[in-house]
Image 1 (tube, rainbow, N blue to C red):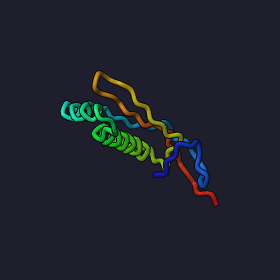
Image 2: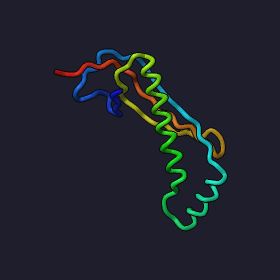
Image 3: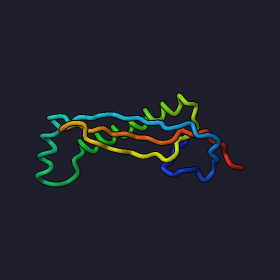
Length: 107
């Protein structure tokens, strides 16, 4: 699957627009990780537990978006964006979305 945050690919032509595709996940903080993160917050530095959680959420959202594009028969996804929004205290949604397209390599 070819993917870009741009509206088009430099080396491919969009033949057909198939529509919006998206993938999301909702993640909640873990009380044990919150305690460790709170301690790290006192001394400063990266909070690795949250970094890992958000990276996994991004990958899962992308995977779900790609699966939706594959179901439409897409070769690529253009204009990919990420949005994060709170759902409740301690939980947030991460949404990946873009436009599924059919592509042809330029000659």
